[in-house]
Length: 471
Image (cartoon, rainbow, N blue to C red; front, side, top):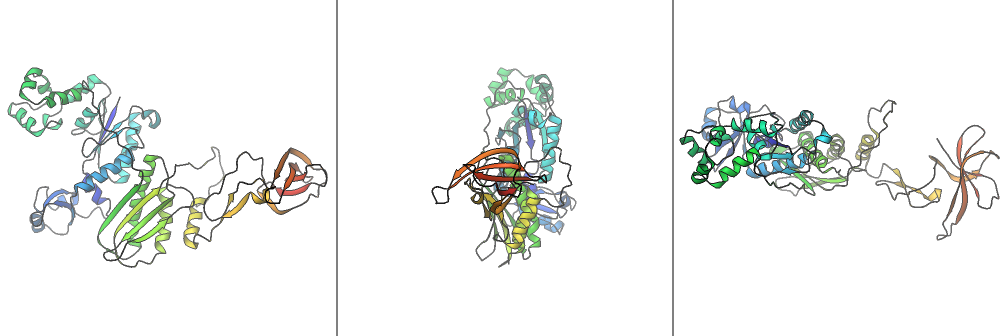
């Protein structure tokens, strides 16, 4: 088996920055009680001001000004790690969260679908960058080695066990995953590299250090099997972006809305599902949350289309008070069904897809203003369809050819001797509601070359009656 480790190098900072529109603004994350708050993480713009991790926030404010401050929240770190695990579930059925701030993916079985590792790795990196997370990626024959090598490498791919031992031996002891007290003891003995540690007698290591040291070394070399937990994606999606200021306009809500819907798309892609309905909550300081339910006509997971629908609904909403946070919750997650496409369709595509135009009209004009057609479970042509605002009605299977244009009422066919192409298709239905029909239907070609759907009484009496025309 082969494993990939995605090390999330600044997960806390990325989680905060991706909710901000200006990434060039200096930002620090501070932890601790006031007035002894300490900087735990900061972006490059803050480093240019002379700020460093471990500096007290009071000293930082004395040294520089103009930087933003946010909380360093351990719970948010876990939230983003689980969010990325849901995203990674799209690429592998075995995703592990056993290591903090890292994802372990079993990739051997996935490369048949996503291609060889260089192409697979490129796709992972591209999507992580689009999501806004810094990362390092390493592939190795076992998960422990992949995690340890990610401490000092980025882009390394180890193919076999002999090559793995060479790279493991070159690891610094302090970066190989051993406990801090063990690393300190080995440092006092002058051991700096794993190669020096492996050269020591095993019985000596067993006497002087805990048993976990040898177990860890064997795991790094693939000699000791390692059981990892398997991540299971959640059944619902919920995400929230909190602002550090009051938002009074719809325009200022569009960036966090796009970010939330991008996260929803990543979650849906990981579970291979779509969304039929989601709720947008606008949270205020004193008033109750403003609830905005949004439901596309058909299940959808395209982030841009979901954003267009949500934006149209949001722009029609009158904000009752300034907004402090935006929350999105989606529980109706049906299976994803790709739209059919023609392999050799050379027709020019419209500037706007029909699905997007339909949703925009519905959002602008209201739910009751846009209608479509839906099938009904009735074989009688005049009762087999209905006008529908939403949904597709009941599906009717195993029917013969049906025309796109049905006449309101059947009328005699002008052509007395049409060319019968298919038929008869007998329809006998309606005995339960007093509108019994017993007819034989045919597809015919008239003298002028048009295709028609006609019927005749079962006993053959009477003329052909025109029911509709084929395109």
